[in-house]
Length: 532
Image (cartoon, rainbow, N blue to C red; front, top):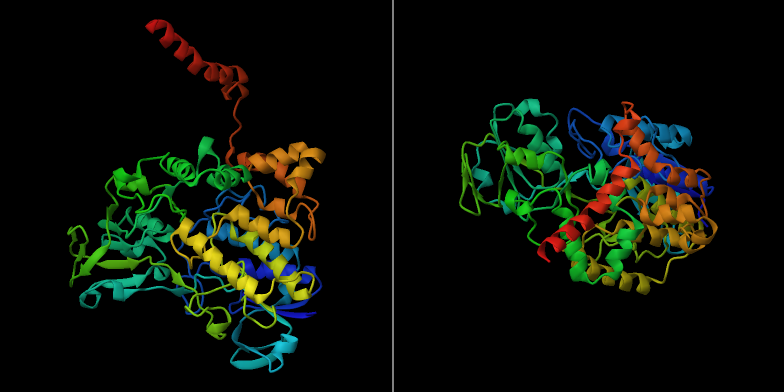
């Protein structure tokens, strides 16, 4: 049974891992390279080596009811979608509320973690850290790696012939900070992800010309969805997840594509994905379609080659006199402080059981927290991962045999290729994943029981948003405020936007709603009578 645990990183996942470690009685120390908590969400004017970096205008893509830790709601006065400064304040509040700061060693980098000589028996790790130029070694019973996957930029220059001839400036988007540096310039943004779309739209307001190049297209979603509610509160429901599981794939694909096309026809904007049915994470941007239709952003296909001053695209169109190329080509996930063989398989791909545990370790005393991508928020995902991980480390939960874990991983790779297009992707289905991990620790919501004991809550949990509070409703780590938070989540969402009191006569009455519902059948009846 483990007693001491080293947590690497004090970002979203690191704070959750630290809190969950203390929750089960582990002696935890968190090592943070910088002098602050928040990781990715701490904006810096200059990108620093070995640290995540964001641009000044970053907002959350998940709303506050879906982006919070399951036992610590985001304050009512915060907006539904938060600027990075606002969300960072929330992370500071979380660290203060659970008294985590005294367990964090700031300005302390983890240089290496290595198995102790008796690892096969004890599962212990030798952790070497560096603080103010001095290195120190300490032995820990377990390690939780929480360094995220937005640190090491992926810059595949070999995929762009002629880039070595290009005389303008080119860079990865991690070095982009503010649009003022690009005013009046001709900018090519490569990559249609969240960052690429954000940067293109932002630059379009002051640059001379902005072209956005995409290899495979993408669905574009707005943060504001049906009836003005946040997209994830409408879409991320147990009901929707249930339909995806039981419906034939063809019908499920049709419903998915119909939903994505609801706001505008992606083909008309040159954005439609090459494979429309894949459940790759969509791009969240409220302004890209407007920028395209106003001509301030031009969409082009993949780049065939560069010249000294131009880019030639696969459709043979050309962008001349380029000043700057910004590669929004994502990140590679790497752990320079430990041997790659610990977390990577024979294909040199990160391979983790349920996205958390290396399946071939002799002892399950190392876990990776936060290395998944889903439509859900990272805080609740990291919380459930960490709760499961510390219970395994503590000896309260057991992992399957190695062969079973490896076989399950192989099966999941096939499923991921079918749904997301790539077997090695970090993507996963949010609701199913959260349910599976919470079932391991005994905190999966028991909806059949709730239908009898608390039908109001059961209905809200099934048809309403699958909010983080559901995973602290029962079982180990239960939070007494979970039921109230679930039943009040819509009110908090509305109160965040309803900053002006609306007179009652301006609200839709039930009579108006009834008339609207009756209008269609009455219209059909009138048409029938007219033709008869």
